[in-house]
Length: 130
Image (cartoon, rainbow, N blue to C red; front, side):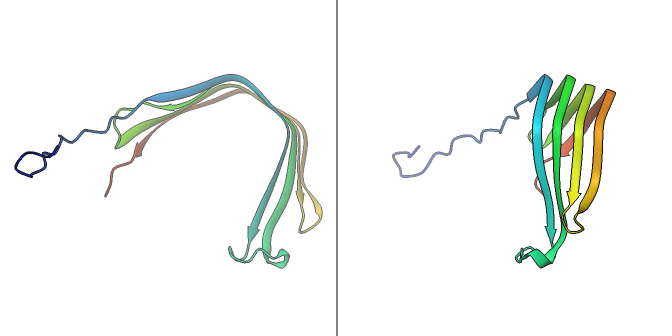
């Protein structure tokens, strides 16, 4: 606000408030997932001859059943507690990876079931300026 004498009255500094948030899911099915990993000798030269890694992959079905959660505590902006929890079953059907450089199969796994799959991760994330 500008005062009558021409000076500016500064509002009090507001402290940034941290916000707690979270997300969760119980079941998800992802079908026909295709992915590619490539690494080049030089980040600015993606010519075919400069490839160090070139993998192509496919997953027919990736299915999760159980509890899965991700979030933070919102305790403060500088130090937030990241939360990751999982307790359930992961089912992967037909995982294939192909090495394009060698023109050969890298991985071919028919059916994988991970039951009693548990993750409980609490980690402090330091966001303070140094």
